[in-house]
Length: 355
Image (tube, rainbow, N blue to C red; front, top):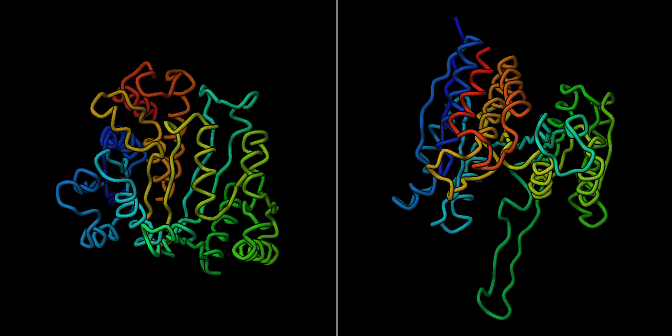
């Protein structure tokens, strides 16, 4: 009997529903070819719901989402909603409530995709960033006193427990081992300035490496140096592990080196629970309904989801189909510049997956 997976789909705002439509098309092609079933349930979360009801992500919805095998997200972001409301009320709420403590961001340049780095190609740009996803500055620890006065004080603290650090590092070490490319894990931090937090990260990194992962080579880079080498020598990297804020910054830099947000996908991972997968580029509201947005990032996110579910052959087929499309069909990843509509790009990838 074929395996069956329950997928919660959050199309979201702007062009989110358009790219999710194409992602589902490709997922269905993979399911048919590799003989498993995907059952989708759509959830109305995003700016439109917030404007209509004042709700972001109700507790009742969170309770339902815990019962799925995975979550597939289009985009969150609405021009009529103040920045921070949807991000905190939906994205961060889901990450924290579902304990999606790993943000996984592959940085891989596909063939045919323009790269802004001189003399760098697919062989040089192929690494993964493991970002701690539920701690650090993003937890909101801190506050504001005397707001609006000349003496106003704002405090936001970077807080990490040994438990949070170790489970992120263990995931990263194991990922470097499974990836089996250079078997190198680089810690990106700021030990020379953030001496408390990164003393903890560095000690845990080296202790764990010595005790449990002697087969994995360890490297350390300050985060500013990491940014420099991501531009100058991206081929140095295999797997990078870092904390929440630094990971947020360097992964978007990595996305630009792999061709931009139109191809960048990510996963918010709970290895023991429900994970969520999404394109990185946002809702792009000015292109809504025009059928010109690039769906490849959403399609790649769907492929990542299949891999996390254990359907590795299907995940590889999705990635290979995307690579064939970038190599031979879509030469420009920009909205309205692909030479194909959103729907047509989805059709091309789905046909490639179907074989």
